[in-house]
Length: 183
Image 1 (cartoon, rainbow, N blue to C red):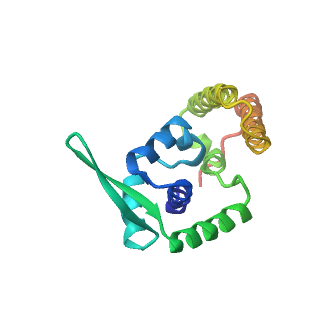
Image 2 (cartoon, one colour; image 1 turned 60 degrees about the vertical axis):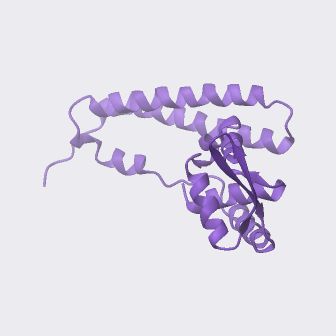
């Protein structure tokens, strides 16, 4: 995921109030944001250090937690301006990309051993079903958040349902796909 996603997440959370990296990581983990955004908890500390160097966040205080020293960060006015710029950019972009290496790989699936492409797509189908189950569990756990959250869940389910249908169609069509002639 892009660095701008991590910046958006960290600046957005700091805009809600001062936090240390561990708190931000807890939010990422508890809300499973890494599944929705691709932001990994390990990227938070690097982002905080970089945001501070850029003047978008500053150390508010340092807290001792046992042997650990935790820095509490606060967003700066320049950080708020950058956050608004990141929001504008993110909200102006389509929510999902149609770009996929899957489409490219499908073009040359016949280069794999007989049956291997089908096995790989069956594994992809199982992964889509696992994601659908995780999404349903997440939706149940977060019931009543807001109509905006419901719309995001609906959209994610529609994408996963479309992926499941595509994989089902491909499984049906794959055995009849012709091998290209070698050149």
